[in-house]
Image (tube, rainbow, N blue to C red; front, side, top):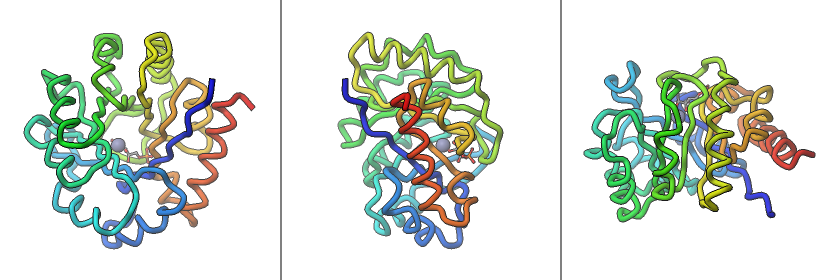
Length: 226
Ligand code: DX5
Ligand code: ZN
């Protein structure tokens, strides 16, 4: 079995918002996706950026956008991000009463569809929905803020999802988000994650591109058991 290539997705939540285009270009040749955290001050207490920023940034980089919507009423807003050219649009299971219908909308708008599972949400009720999705984002913190401490127990959900994906022969990326850094990425990769969001660990580093390369090396070794 070939090991699929790993995705490293720097989160611009930890970047300098006054220099966003430069911050994105700093990881342009090292990263695979750019993770964009959209928060609405309702689904989570924090407030970040929305569609106009995503539209402007789209012209500033070649990197695929991995949009993580931490918002209420994603059915209303999510397709707009697909229309704006996002590669992958992920919304939260907790905010949506018909995730499969929204996944369908996103795919017909030309994007990959992602389902996010927050810290306190069990994975089991959602496993049967996974054939409708391209990405499963498992929070390894409580959604809402960067810079929080990684919760290793949440990797049990990654293991459960990876087992389900393997037994069902599904094509699905399993992404982890929250507290991913040099001292945590290996355990997440060993648990079966193959996409890794990192905010503080990338933009808190002196050289963000080098930080991405280092994370990739650690994840690759852990994923292949080398
Ligand atoms: C938090 C966001 C994360 C955040 C991660 O709710 O979804 O993407 O940027 O930041 P770090 O890597 O600092 O935990
Ligand atoms: Zn995120």
